[in-house]
Amino acid sequence: MVLLVLYLVAITAEAMTAALAAGRRDMDWVGVCIIACVTALGGGSVRDVLLGHYPLTWVLHPEYLWITAGAAMLTALAAPAMKRLHSLFLLLDALGLVVFTVIGCQVALQMELPVTVVLVSGMITGCAGGVLRDVLCNDIPLLLRKELYASVSVVTGILFVGARALDVNPNIAMFVAMGLGLAMRILAIRFDWQMPKFVYRDEWR
Amino acid sequence: MVLLVLYLVAITAEAMTAALAAGRRDMDWVGVCIIACVTALGGGSVRDVLLGHYPLTWVLHPEYLWITAGAAMLTALAAPAMKRLHSLFLLLDALGLVVFTVIGCQVALQMELPVTVVLVSGMITGCAGGVLRDVLCNDIPLLLRKELYASVSVVTGILFVGARALDVNPNIAMFVAMGLGLAMRILAIRFDWQMPKFVYRDEWR
Amino acid sequence: MVLLVLYLVAITAEAMTAALAAGRRDMDWVGVCIIACVTALGGGSVRDVLLGHYPLTWVLHPEYLWITAGAAMLTALAAPAMKRLHSLFLLLDALGLVVFTVIGCQVALQMELPVTVVLVSGMITGCAGGVLRDVLCNDIPLLLRKELYASVSVVTGILFVGARALDVNPNIAMFVAMGLGLAMRILAIRFDWQMPKFVYRDEWR
Image (cartoon, rainbow over all chains, first blue to last red; front, side, top):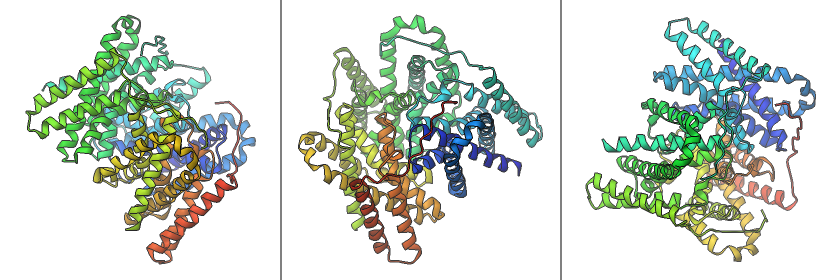
């Protein structure tokens, strides 16, 4: 199943970017593995807990924990060599975002939830892992501030759900949504697209 | 049902204060909507997840997501005009606190949980949304530091549960608890009431 | 049952260290109690939510909420006198870690989950409360940065699960795992053992 392969690529990619984030905070090796697992598997876990969709993915497939921890360790070992792979990382990270989003939408579709919840489920799956990583690293979550991260997830979800509603073949719907979402993300990074910001200054609270 | 109207007012009010908090952190429009939804619906979600009370409110009523996101967008658009409405905001925020608290107590009462858990359920519903907002904005949660926020929630809960235990009519119990809680909160802001602080300095850890 | 006594000692100890952490952030008394409850009972709550193991401990036994809140208040009252008890605190905190870990492993074993999940369950139970405390106090979680905290939890879990797999008497398995874990933690503090750190500097993200 191609989605499983994409999922494995996605959790590996998320684990690698998480390991670099942990390295910027001088975490020890156990911390690196924990941050990697939380980032790669946290989005799906938050979704499953909120939707009451038990058991969680990593409880059913504990091997995913080993894959993410292993990818994080390798990343920490090979970090100096990876500085040249910057573009590859951004691509893998973007792939993770759209793959997680489509998987999250599918889970909610299978539970026959309303379409708004399906989109939110996709967005949570795609984004919550990165938010947890940023909270644990004591940053303001990046997703809330730039780079169309959450917007790409919403658009990917709308494309996927829209295509499914039009009875498009599930695999085609999946690839179209992921492809266009990926393109949007890459263009956003390439041309520094940003959503308008809401800047407010008035400390009355 | 009057509680539903109050609930809608409360989530709108929480969405508006959350939007202003997001604006202080220069978040983009998607981030503003996410923070608003998390703040307005997060307290109830944390309660439902901890009590195993599925499905969550916004899964059953996805329109609440649209209401909070819409209120947040309008707030961001109208922010300059809102500086004059400072007092109204504080009042709506206080109303949200007591309404959420009473709803949280009711959910736990319907699940026939022990009275301590009922009070905690009210407090989580009233306060956890604001805590999540502060964590995502990378602040120390306000609730833990000032303004009797959590204390008002506890007192409101005790009044409501106490009145229900005395077989007071549910609606009267609700209004008495919310009214007195609201009064306590407004007096706390007006006269700058604070709980005693515990200040400790000794970095041995 | 000796494990219950150890559990009560552990939540009391965690409540006390949490109260001191809250005092360093100038929290008010309600905040101190909330932080104490989250620290002492949060690890088990996160585990139960992730594993779908309802109802949560403190819903079934609300008296644990009173014990932790009470211990936190006493700690705040007696804080000046406690500076001399530094070593006792570290010992109690270490005891809490190994006791929580063993309890977390047991819960997962009773649910007949795979061994990786059993170890993760022990680690979450042992460590997540402290992570929540640090997030609410707006720190980078200590656990991710030093003192072999998470590592001690993993080793304790492996010893316990390994001994159980070898059909060692449950009580003996428990005491051996907790004893060796405790020793490892004390030696780590005493001799400042640290896991190697992964330090990475390259702000391309």
